[in-house]
Amino acid sequence: DNARIRYQLGRVLFYSGQFDEAMAEMRRAAEGGHAQAQFIYGIFVIKGRPGAPSDPCIASRMWQAAAEGGRYAATVHYAMQRLRGTFDACADPASADDLERWLTAAEQAAPAGYAGYYRRVFIEDLRYRLGQAAAT
Image 1 (cartoon, rainbow, N blue to C red):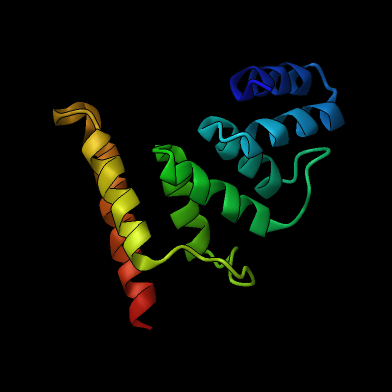
Image 2 (cartoon, helix red, strand yellow; image 1 turned 180 degrees about the vertical axis):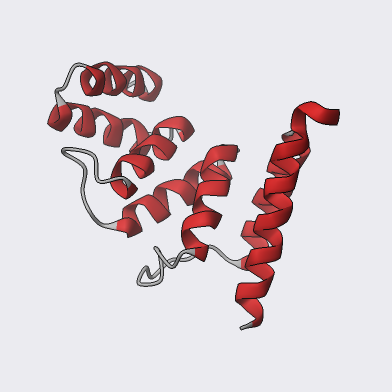
């Protein structure tokens, strides 16, 4: 019942080509609240990996949960896919306030100075594009 161990098992199974088993373990880890598993499971769904479901709304839910768990990669991937319209048919989109809160947290977690420069620029661009999309 350890979500972290299930996540690691899912990775091993995926890299060894046991895709159906990998998806099952990654899903269990994600449903168990492991933020990295939630992010990776969403990636599997969006990228159409073998054994993964094809419903983008699963990725939406997983990435929202991972963003709430402080997973920066889920935050930016969620925003990016939302701007692309991937989640338009999903019934549970994140609010503008949630997106802003997640982006602010990701920005604050960026390393100081040059090391975090590109992360901050990317987040600034996402904010701009989200604002433009909301204005239309």
